[in-house]
Every structure is written in structure tokens, then in C-alpha cells.
Image 1 (cartoon, rainbow, N blue to C red):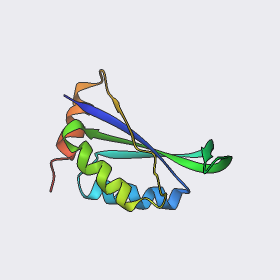
Image 2: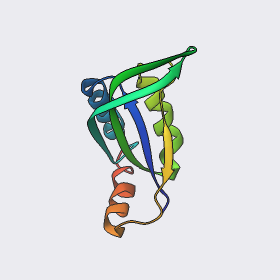
Image 3: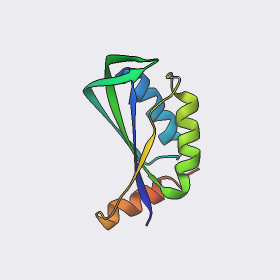
Image 4: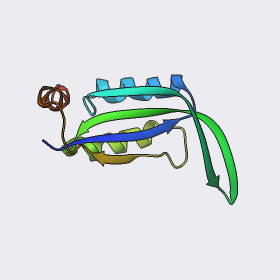
Length: 106
């Protein structure tokens, strides 16, 4: 089972929830955890910036990555949204199967 964890940041919880509902509703991801209280420090346009954000943790099978990433980027308000995919090396088999099954629902 090739399952991936995607991480992405959003400017606020309502934006993250809107994106999460769209991706889950379209069966592109099985689940999105929205984690508040994130502070990001980054370089943008030659300056060091800092912003409060929320973190989205998304679970999807590898064969849905392309479609999930494309839709996430299209829905995202940032010019260059963070979308990073991390492989799941191991996990509880029934949960991993649920991720696959949840993304096969039309």
C-alpha cells in the first residue's frame, strides 16, 4: 500500500477547512487534520517574513497524489502553496486500507 502524507499550510482555519472539505468531498484525500497555532518564518521576495498559519496534514494513496496536489494548488490562496508529500513507511493495516477505500468513492 503506497500511502502518502501531504503537508500544507494555510493562512487560517476557515481556508484550511474549505480546502479540506473540497478534497475529501472529491475523494482525493481520505482525511485532513487541521492543526492551529503554527508560526512560520520564511524568506519571500528577498525578505524574512513571519506569519501565523494553520497546518493541514492530508492522507492519500500515491495514485491520487497528482490529482490531489493539482486541486489543492488550485484552491489555495497563496501564490506558491506548500505541498510536500512524505511516504508512509508502515502503519495500522486497517487504517491504511481505509485511506485507499475512502478515495475510491465517487
